[in-house]
Image 1 (tube, helix red, strand yellow):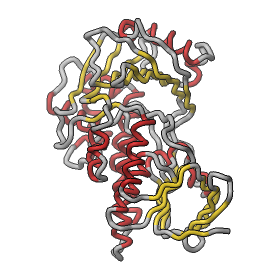
Image 2 (spheres, rainbow, N blue to C red):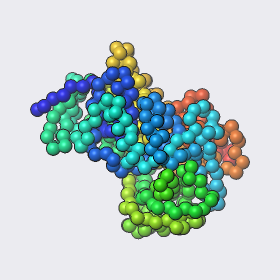
Image 3 (cartoon, rainbow, N blue to C red):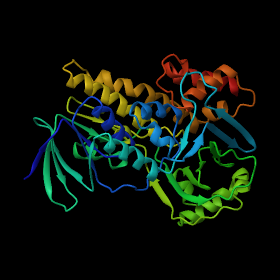
Image 4 (tube, rainbow, N blue to C red):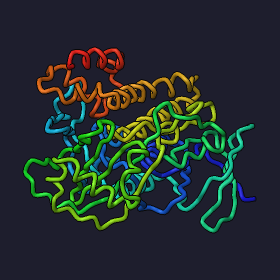
Length: 407
């Protein structure tokens, strides 16, 4: 069987894979990226956070993204039963970029992957990893585009395969998530929005009037379309048509603000759905592999944290690998996993707080404390790793205290 040799194999050419490859290539570390699909391809998770722009800039991809004509995003808006509030990502506790984009992921992901290739990274499209042997040096078995097997010997493997979760499945690392199973149904619409009350520079999160655990996302794009989705427990959605488009239309009409905003919307595209999307693993890394982004853990789409966690994991793993290849002593548990989990656990606190209602009380409070709002805004903007923010170092205690005050 044909065999190749490289330093790092990355499984997946999505945002975390492309960025990790570019960051490693900057240090002359030989990388091969294995991607099962052919780009562009559809992916959900279209609303970025400002914190991820710093990683994109570090990977020398920011100029290309800016030329992508994506919709500017400068904050987030929340609506529940007549109560409305906005967060301006430029008015936050943590210094840093305050604006980002809302993107159709097919084009966005291709820009990042193309930039990685332009910088010198090898990406093998329509190739699929089917086996991994970690007994000695990592040895991957791969099928090429003609379904012919070959092997790659590497010093290290990064899994950036997202929901495909290649290594967790091959290495039996998957464990149930601590978060309840939920279902997301979604589509892209031609929004035809004329309402001046709607700010296209912000994602709109709306809460169902009868069930505060059910929420909607509305993510506007620069071409006059929007990503529209609803997240709920599966038994709630059983009360609606099996046709997800019809279900979405009915659900929109039940939320008065969305009903008005989307009064002229058209639904020309097919729907998608993800069931039981939250995921976890026994371990995120070893001295031979690391899991990036959704391949390791996915929380919930409520705060658009997916791409940011993916890119931060790419950044942290790449920095650790550079040290390792330079002969420095590294501790993957401390240098990668514990470092990454600071932000993941902060987002986890906010996801859990959203569904218990604590965070909704805080976010929708009519008279928020400006300093506290700035600290929370920093996390909503993706700066969940800023240990100078007390809502990062003590997320559960701080959120509980503020929620009690907001009752």
